[in-house]
Image 1 (cartoon, rainbow, N blue to C red):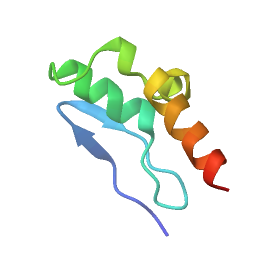
Image 2 (tube, one colour):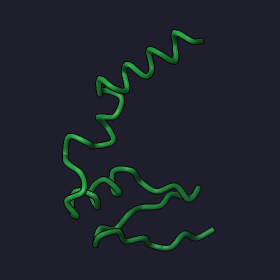
Image 3 (cartoon, rainbow, N blue to C red):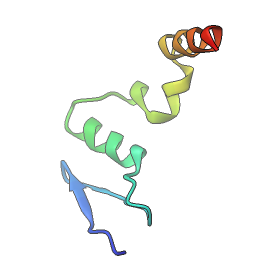
Length: 62
């Protein structure tokens, strides 16, 4: 299946063969529009204190 080219806030967003949008491209579009900061990059998600606490809580209940 061929997926269309997607543009968000003037930023081209890659779509893979399974139809998934590239999170880094979406983040770049949000930064370009002033709706996100570099510190909110997808690669920083698991490093945040809030997410670490959430993961610990999930593990404690398992």
